[in-house]
Length: 154
Ligand SMILES: [Fe+2]
Ligand SMILES: [Fe+2]
Image 1 (cartoon, helix red, strand yellow):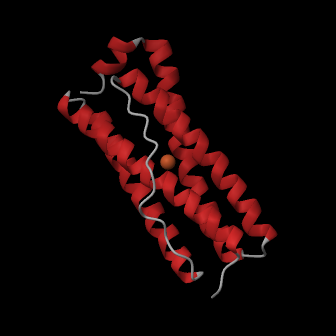
Image 2 (cartoon, rainbow, N blue to C red):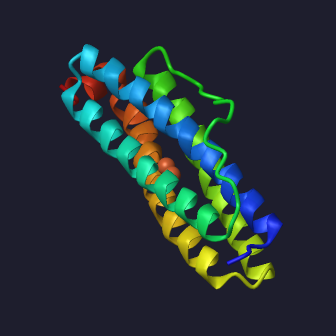
């Protein structure tokens, strides 16, 4: 089915962001693995895999709409060199994702593309959960302090 070019642009923009998120989370999860923060390692790795599933859905939809999936975009990763910076950068990434999918839903609705709207809304819900996790970590870091926070991540 020939898709609206504005919708395909939204899907490709989201795809670029997902590919960036996957790379950022894989670096962060492996840093945590290296430091033996097993709980953080698993949490971030699970999130990376969810972002992969998002990318898969976006690619599938772009192809369905007869667009070209841009799988070779410049990645705008923001790697954190320690846990507080990771949490900070990942929070910013998820804030961006929630805003992007909200805007994307609006574009799909405007274009009368209900199928894309449904896909974007599904992904949006996952991004809201990611953001909630990270905001909770920010709160925990603030309330417990870094040492206590990290002591429960091993
Ligand atoms: Fe995602
Ligand atoms: Fe996410």
